Amino acid sequence: MIDQAHMHDAAGSAGAMYQHHDHAMKELPAGRAAVIIVVTFAVLLAALWLTSFAIPVRF
Image (cartoon, rainbow, N blue to C red; front, side, top):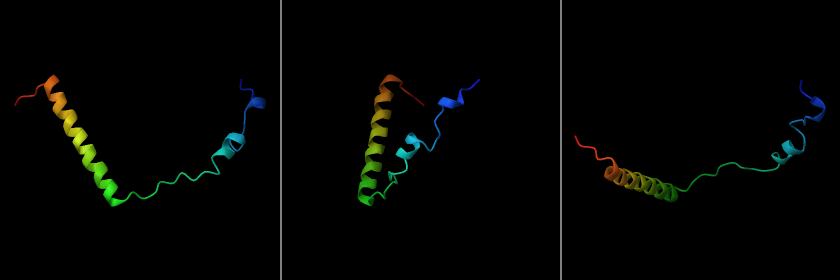
């Protein structure tokens, strides 16, 4: 059986904490987005290159 006397309402002190903060994502500038895409692609290629030493794939 659940002891509801000790349960807290969602709008209690913990719920009030989230009502005063604005965590909306802002638009990313095009230059920075391009850099992130290029760096991510470079990391992908480096990971594939390093993996090819451990697990050689031949066709």
